[in-house]
Image: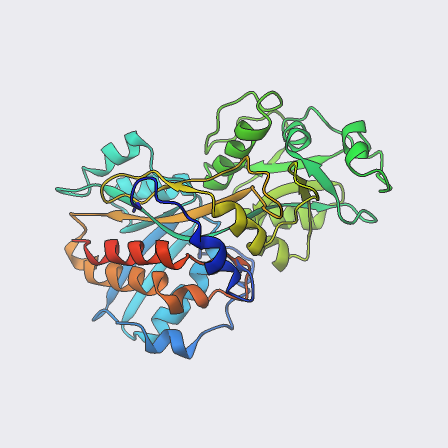
Amino acid sequence: MKLSRNSGLRALTVGAVAVSSALVLTACGSDDNASPGDTKTSGAAKSSIACAKGGQLLASGSSAQKNAMDVWVKNYMAACPGTNINYKSSSSGEGVTQFNQGAVSIAGSDSPLKPEEITASKTICKGGQGIDLPMVGGPIAIGYHLPGVDNLVLDAPTLAKIFNSTITKWDDEAIKKLNPTAKLPSSNIQAFHRSTDSGTTDNLTKYFNATAKAEWPYEHAKAWKGKGGQSAPGSADIASNVKQAEGTIGYFELSFATANNLQTVKLATGAAAPVAASSENASKAIAEAKVTGTGTDLSLKLAYDTKAEGAYPLALVTYEIACDKGNKADTLELAKSFLTYIASEDGQKGLSGIGYAPLPTEIATKVRAQIATLS
């Protein structure tokens, strides 16, 4: 669902920094990794939930929001006996496909709907269309496994070359120049990317398009277009592979790096100092985003090329996708109730221990208002 045209997100920095712990977004589902937020059920969040009368809600999509969804689903179902919310963590592409096939009532996606996807949604959303509702943001971490090398610094051109198999050795001159005091091995780099259509991939390649076009000669896309490398289906899978083998590098949401105790790359952006992947630093970059959605859609355009001090530009916002009109009658009440909860102050703060960036008040207010109009 989408926010008013050209509305700035300057409130994001304040809204996110006010949360003392970083929040990190990851879709809930059947991944093997335990959710860091599983023990964070909040009594305050429960008491604020206006429960639906019951029923089952099917949803799927973004693995980026898995850990957030784990917390949201657990809290909601604990507060609302008789309800069953099943979110399958897969990929943004699969979630949108299943939504437009009518297999799920809500999809999670790290990229806004494309024009052709909106057109396709009108078959399912009788009298309406699918819309993007921004729900939570956070950094895409570049995790690596290289014993003896701490505080690895890379810039966008070097990262693009690594993921396009142009740079294949850890002691490549470009990496050495950015890390003059590091003891870099001469071993091969094993770079992991997503095997399925992924909003995380789309955001990573948008970052490359904005900052390393010469080194990444492909248009951004959910499908991986780079040469070489190894693949895995979800963020949890990539993080697991990086954890298990030395010399590896991959991209995933910060919560997966935290859960697997992985080192993450600092980005050289042109600011005075390299910037670490953190909720606060991602929020500084997301604060420069613009709302580009029209009508009921609230999609955003992020500032991937920012050079602001302390801003981590490799970030994403995950959307929940639903029909503005024409939602399934038997799941509408539960869908609105659940979406209202996760967009609420309690729903956002319930993620405070797992590295996500909550919605700023300005954005959250618009999202809640849009949810209330779903029919």
